[in-house]
Length: 402
Image 1 (cartoon, helix red, strand yellow):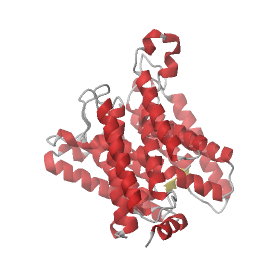
Image 2: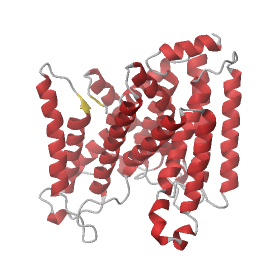
Image 3: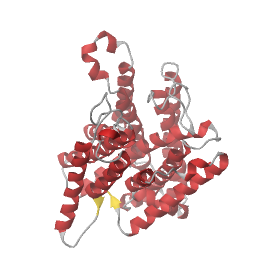
């Protein structure tokens, strides 16, 4: 199949299978690494590296893969909404609402983990956490009743429950109420997505403009960690969002990768796409290596070296998936990751929901009683079970979307 036919096939497809496969694998690994933190006796390289280690483990690649996939998906979501006849302002409004939903969920999840004073709350924090997930599902779940009034009531019930939970929250002595300790994984994705979609709209998705935006995000991060904050304390807030800029740069690398592989170029050779992707990955590695002495590799600090090394790895992984799935049509194996790819939010939240239920009962995860390879294989098996549950929920159209 020549490149022109390949591009046409991708345009006509409702989903891009290689992107879906990457998303599904990423969410599967997310479940694995979230459980690995409680497993003793395994290689530290399978877990998150300490903030000051100047290193990255396997687990430190999962979050940037989330961000990278967000970037790769933006052009297709934009194109779909354009075909529906939506204006630019409507698309931006939809994106802002979507980002707000992710930020809200991340905010609630973080406050359920720490910063609370359970003795001052009417219900246990485990119950509060579980009810917040119920509210998420009601508010952002996809469910259809014959009578649309019931659907509307479900949405309102979710919103009211979320407001009541926020009102009932009591923070510890320093915080008093819910606070932005950090935004949580979903919140960080939400902020990066919002900034990236605005950049995409402003630049029109032009490749050189996206590359310049990556440079600007990195420059902003560098300035936020420079002496300017001390010299001009009144303007310190303007330079306080370095982490968001760093995460946005990863989303933008996903946008660039999507442009390389799926934007028509007039070329008749697929191998040029791989050459461009290889050149982009090499450029990212070189940038990371140059910046590393100034900004050591750290996921916790969201340093540019971590961002660029992670993005380079994502470009390489996606290039392989594109070749395997879209060019060689070796696709049957992707069905195992399809549940996570098509219903990622439920896939992400399900382990947390089960964890809240365990906490209410005063139980601990049996996985964390295992060690070494037994624990590692158990975590992989647990992730497979989660995907099987999500697949069953998909059959009942139990999904979450914004």
